[in-house]
Image (cartoon, rainbow over the protein chains, first blue to last red):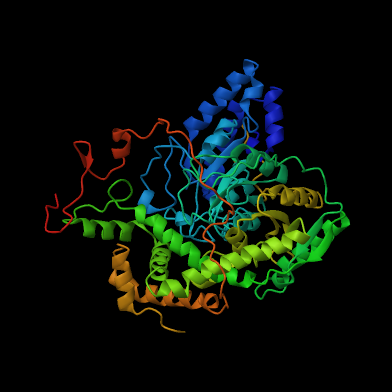
Length: 497
Length: 103
């Protein structure tokens, strides 16, 4: 049985348009493959079979009636959504016991836009609880496994989104990125992950973690597929007051190359303590490849980038503390039964409903915002945010985009990092991008020389110039053999029928 | 390592954020929180005299006005559908001041 989830967006769209295969066949093959392959990976928390087949039939009907043009740019493309995105007809659990039974009463804009563009919704994907984490180990429903080595984490928090694409269980997935949660798992799983500039994709209907940092973006196996998906989900949405009408065609410059493009490199990133040799070597190789393609490298400084980590771990928990106050056990969410007063119902429900990392972040945020402490941490973090934004602006006066590592190392083993402060270092190269609101993406550049595991490089673009990094990534992508599906998964696991 | 929070502080914060914390978790959580707060120290070391704070990453936002228009919102039934308890179109909660009926 063909595994259509291993196909690219263009192949699927063209194949359906030419009636080489039907959307129904695509959906059915993906569903059969998930049933077999996901026992190894555990990327999916819920498979939305009826929704997938219903959408496929709609597309097939439109095509048979000659209304292909109405089908949209993701017509027939099998997609799946991170489980912090509301979708009518599914649960939205945020991988938390708190929302284990929660069924969406409305759809997130990004989800509705993807489906509106013709995508076939396969289901909802595992994540770190409420997106707090870098390994997907904090999921209440158990960790997702990295398809390249199932003894290792897929990264996080969008670990299910990255693993589903790397194991050819979906063509495109959506994730969310507050400090690296799309880019780091994309790097660990060897797929493309794009965090657009803050405001490019509406956050409406996506459960908030840190509202001034959260951004939705696509994960896919090629830059082109990610760009198609971004075209589908981006745009002004009046239900997100920060959403922006960028009117950008993210596919427009895919074939332009980088001849004459000035690309920045940050010496302090390349010399950062903790950056593994095999990762550094891959970033340097990517720089050489871009130079061969005609790009010019310019050293740029981000003098306050070092402060980004501590600023992020102040701002993030403070905003999360505020966002997670809404879980009151009364209107929705887990309710511990049998309490005589509301206070004890709150405490028992939140105590049992939230996992340990979530409790840590809520309590940390509460402490950091308390009187006296606020002036020591939160206010300086907001000031540092100004400096980091300014650093990037100055750098981008000289370059069109910046090349950097995504993560200091390749995927780690389950349980290998149990100290939360060490886990937080996973984000050292990614958080400053969220703080400044720029675009950032991870592009797979092959396997590390020592670990044999996928390595990604990060491309960072100025705010609302996401097409710059996409252009550079598309050019750089041509330098590598295209192996984006983990060994053993490309053919699908559903078996010959 | 500096002790920013005692175990007593941790219990007080948990109560404030309405998280019922099992007593056996207080010790480890105190260690974790102190470690994390310690790791935030760099933020306290910068000379930030005169630097304006930034609270969101988009510059130059201005107010957007539009005409009032009726839109669809959740019905009362939909809004109540996920409640732990409901009665006569309302959310039901236990007594707020304590000493109520646990049924």
